[in-house]
Amino acid sequence: MPVLVYAENNGGLCKKSAFEAVTFAKKTADLLNTTCVAVTTGNPSNASELGFYGASVVKNIDLTIHFFDDQVYASVVAQVAGQLNADMVILSHSAQGKAMAGRLAIKLQAGLVSAVNSFPILNDGFIVSKSVYSGKAVGHLKITSTKKVISVLGNSIPPAKTGVQAEIENSIVTEPASRIKVTVMPKQDNVVPLPEADLVVSGGRGFGDLKTGVSWKSWPKNLARQQHAADRWLTRVGDHIMNTSARRE
Amino acid sequence: MGGTVTIVHVGTAANDTIIRKGLAIGADAAIRIDKEAIDSYDVANQIANAVKGEDYDIIFTGKETIEYNNSEVGAMLGELLELPFISYAISMNIEGNQAILIRDMGGIEEKVELATPMVVSASKGLAEQRIPNMRGIMMAKSKPLQVLPPVAVGTMIEVVKYETPVTRSSCIMIDPENMDELVRLLHEEAKVI
Image (cartoon, rainbow over all chains, first blue to last red; front, top):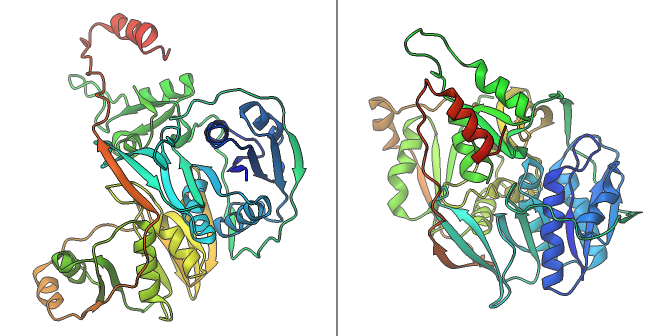
């Protein structure tokens, strides 16, 4: 029974969050003395690279929809989990992962822990840890069910290359009809989405020179672009920093 | 939409004050499932059981709890009720039974169209918080608050222990006139430039 990891892609490319999730899944599979299998949708161009991070094989699902629908995605990933008899499904704690994890947990009748930030400990059951109470404590949680769903917090597990390129196999699943239509998907070139950022440049709304009254509002944005960092004002960043391990400078 | 709003809450009678606050800012009725909430799985199942068979057009949830930051209940409700789920909605317009929402997909905003019924988790921007006025507070006292018994759900997660996190390094204050020092620290210590 392999550990199944959903490796999400954005614009046809698996990104760092996917590599982090695969690294977590591989380490967990090693602890459980089993293998790690990745599942992707839409045949991302770098899917075979998931093997570098520990996936022994990549199961790709070709979907007819070209946008994210958690109902469809959770259904097809659950079907692959069923085909492989996988008791554990790992996801990134990203926008997609958050929307899917709850559905998957219900579908698989699995215990769910979200935003896990360290590898599991198996001394006394299956125990994972996560930041709780707005970062003021670390909670150690035991998943008591046979089936488990875990989402991995961004920037908490450094991607580790331990393997070789993986073979890609097509998975045959039944795609349920989507009940939503995504009509606008603006691409923001050169902008790092906040949850994917290693580094966050932030500044308050009143950021500037008090003596001259000159606003420095553009300064954090320019610095962020130069450093390939995310830029946000403090109120928004405050919410995010509590939930990730991104560095704030 | 010309409809009504019902608050659904899982908690004990100690939380009635908060529920009445919701009634004071405009909700028409409330349902409280009488139990201490255990986890997302428990809460989602209790709510699904309470609303199943009712004719709700939209079920709104929050973004996440402040205790565990899980973001789980909305998706679980969507699955339990077999409804579409739109996460992190930042705006919504309704025309008939068609809804147009903007959702935040990790910094990228997507426009989503779908028909009701649906489950929506609300993110910042979806609505402006209102403060109850005296008339609302007085009216809330007479609005119906139905108390339902819980269903047996169980849990698949146990809290083993809590620990305090590793202390973060302290903030370094730099003289605004000393830009060279700022650049040096960013370069040599933070290693970000």
